[in-house]
Amino acid sequence: MCFRAKRQAFTLVELLVVIAIIGVLVGLLLPAVQAAREAARRMSCSNNFKQIGLAIHNYHAAYNRLPIHGGGTLDSGSGTAWESGTSTAPAGRNALNLSSLVALTPFFEQQAIWEQVVNPYQVTSGAAIGRVFNPMGPDPNRSISNITNAVGGSYAPFETDIASLRCPSDPGVGLPAQGRTNYAVCAGDSVFMGNSGIPNSVTGIPSSGTSEDVRTCQRGFFVHRSAMGFRDILDGLANTICMGEIVTDLGDQDKRTHAAFITGDLAVAGGALSCSTFTDPTRPQFWASTAPLTGTAENKRGYKWAYSRPLYTQFNTIRPPNQEVCMGSATSGGTLSAGSHTSPGVVPAGSRHQGGCHVLMGDGAVKFITDSIDAGDQSSAMVQRVNSIWTGPYLGAGRASPFGLWGALGTRANKETISTEF
Image 1: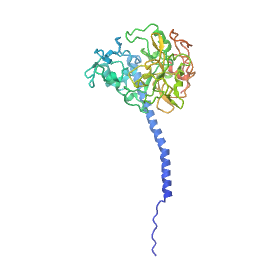
Image 2: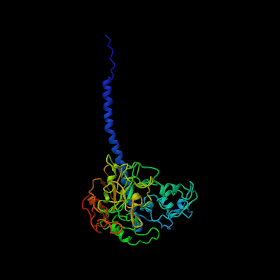
Image 3: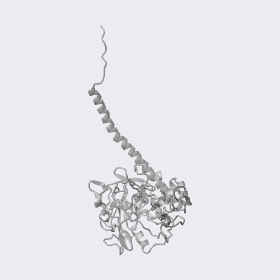
Image 4: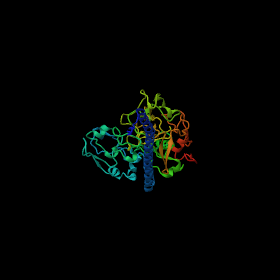
């Protein structure tokens, strides 16, 4: 007798079960893949920071001081008339507004950019072709219209995105930013005089009372327009934050990247929380539609790596990481005015990493700080000198930071040290 073998095949139910199992496995695998990718990006970000730390130490070994945050050439006193088309004078005069990152470029393998900065630079394209910039370049606080008009011109060194200054987890690219950075210097635990500095930008001579104000209140690793060195870090390099991560803007009204402002002083009691009420209660990471936001589309966090003002390349250890950016305490004719993108401000660290951000310690170590770090009394006043323009309670000079461990790590010479890992 002859028996014919019966062909075996999947039933519809079996096929559906297999597809469901594959779907579950893919669903389990994708988060692991995403987590692995973010871990790689976070490691790359940490390595960038280590290279910057090495560059800072090499710079100090070469010049026996830190690169000045707020260096460059003096202003002529005529403002930026050459950029707006009312003058054809040689382009230059950066008015002591260059960030410390400019001076560090040859120390983290960007010698080509440094050579362009320290030599006369000729515009090679656009409406201002043939225009020559003086050594050290123009004021980095330029608008895109300045760059594209016939008497301004593109200054490529300051408009270049440098890979070493970018965190791979931050997706921000392109205009209206003019050279993004995710790494900013630590300015301490007070906003007072954070946008100014000891020397006048026109004469180079300290303004009356400014020196004492800055020495009292600016207690960070870097002080705007001041020459600092490792000998100034009395708390020890391992106990003091040198730089920290910041987030660049994506045009989405993120409270970490688009600054709100107040008309008043941020350094008084409760000042650090002045803008916290402007956030959207349903989306706490973003500003509400009614929030008073400052600046144009070009004036956002981390948008100009060569510009030394707080919004762009500074952070302070007042609010914990990934909190809101708040500008205020601008002065005009001896009176308070609304904060602007060039004003002092509460400018926290932050990142696109989950749960915190990287900081670079003075000894070159890179640490990850969580959003929940002890930040003390957030409603406290900041260290600030009594001045007829400002009123309210003040903390005296030399006091311990009111902003907990976070504030203590941001001050350089306050005798606040830690004995354990954090």
